[in-house]
Image (tube, rainbow, N blue to C red):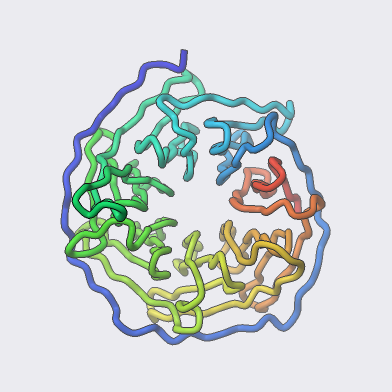
Length: 362
């Protein structure tokens, strides 16, 4: 048995003040002076089934790696010492585990996009708790006289210092907050009047001051939400990037700089909240296939790591020297996606095209 399932559906809408910038913000463009290549040490582990649909990994304090398998409807983990995979069907799962984080107590929080809930799993008790989200309605494109009911589609999530869970709602064009102590949801619509499936908020992060940052992949914009007031401000990247890029992952480094990946271009973007300015770092691309950058992690204010699908590599940006180092992944055309760092400072990443979990020891 997977344990007792607790369904809490209390929710309310809180329309926040929204401030949308109207002009693209100028950007500095830094072309790396040098691109180095390093081998590092790679380990790759094939999951038990093909077509697993590996998503974003997260590593707990013991070094165990957690991830969702959208192709097999699993919440999964991997023990590096024993080389053992554990796969669990989440309650009412619909193969939609997207974002996943490890809490300070080593329990797991995840977003089930298709089953439309925020889930919590305690590995010690094997107990699941699910918090159901409301559906959204929109006119049926094929029949304007009818409406469609859609899941809110939670995508990525982050925990604040009070233990609340913040997440993006891709279909609902909102940012959601789950107050874990009460099971109560608060929803912050990103437009007025409210839209559905127009803005597609995707990635989310928390900076050192507790401010929420998120990407709007539908309009390729960066958003900021003040948790104390609900006020939302949207920043538009430079015209050259905004016209072609799809903003995906977002991450705050220890100095408070905001970093973003662009999945269909080769720009790694940095946003300075104090200057309200973007800096674009052009990531060198080699090879053929899916272009762009997806996974992202900042291990220091100077060290930014990303997955580069078209180059089949893990890239490291030294911010001070503006240079990239590439770590080519041994398995060709593996399409690396999510990336996370373990307590031993090694990096774990998912290889979505080859059903493998990868480890890089730089």
